[in-house]
Length: 76
Image (cartoon, rainbow, N blue to C red; front, top):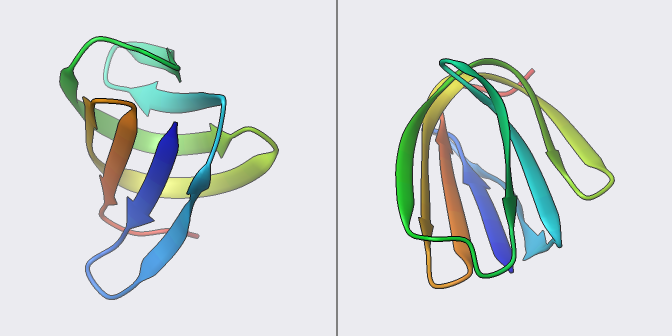
């Protein structure tokens, strides 16, 4: 699936990944290929896309048609 991570000032990551792990408000969760459509808020924490690791400051994720769009408030 195609993953895109965007902050208010730049595009941080764009590429393919087979699994994305996100820090949700109620705990971490994973997105796999062919996941159902989803919109969720994110907490401060660790985001992984396969072997790429990012520390985000919270945000929102949208999953639709094998595309994962993460709008992060900030990346450390």
